[in-house]
Image (cartoon, rainbow, N blue to C red; front, side, top):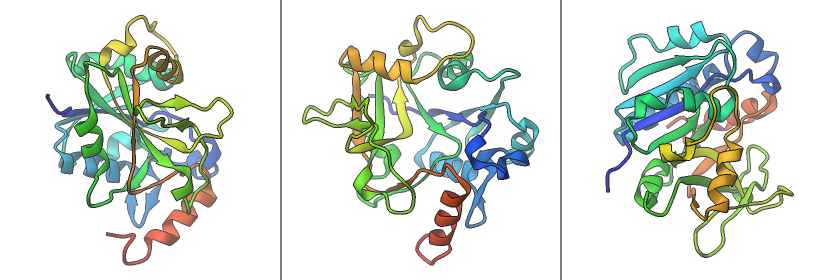
Length: 240
C-alpha cells in the first residue's frame, strides 16, 4: 500500500475568534515559541516524507506567500481563493494537484506533538486502507486536553469507525488531521462547501474510520488559547 506523499493545508480562513491578532496576520502565521503554526506543520510533513503541500489562501494571502518564499521542505503550491470556498470547496478547487491519489489534509493553524511510539502522520498512514475507507481522521481524547478546551466531536466504537456525536458530548475531538481519497469529492459542486458534509457522507457509508492520537494536540481558537500554549511551550520540553 502506497503511503500518501502529498498534503493539503487549510490556511484561507479569517480566524475571527483570534481577533485582534488576525486583523493584522493570518492565523497560520501566529507563533508558538518563535515558530509559526504553519512552519511547524510543514516541518512535521517534511520529517514524514511528504513531497508536495498545497496550501489555500485568502485572508491576508500575501503574508503567507511571503512567509513561504525560499523555504526548504516539500514543494509548495498555493491555491488562492478570491472568494472563500470553505473547508471542502477549497480542497475541491485544488484536486488536480493530487493526481487521483489519497492525501493528507491538515489545518494551517494546527499544533500537535507526537508520542515517540505513535507519531500522528505515521499512525494515520499505517491504518489507511483505501479499500475500506474514504476518510481516516485523527482524534484527540478530550480527557487528554489540558491546555485548551476540548469538544466531544466523535466517539470511536470497537470496530474503529468514527461516529459523530451530534450533541458534541463524544469522547474525542477532531484534530482536523486526516487522510482522504479524492473520490469523496465526487458530486461536490464548484463553489463554497463544508467538509463536515463529506465526513457525514463517509460515516453513512461505513467508510469513516479513526485513529486515536497518542501525543498532545491543542485547539488554538482564541488569544487566550494561544497564550496558554505559548506559556507551556516556553519550557524546555515544549520548545523541543
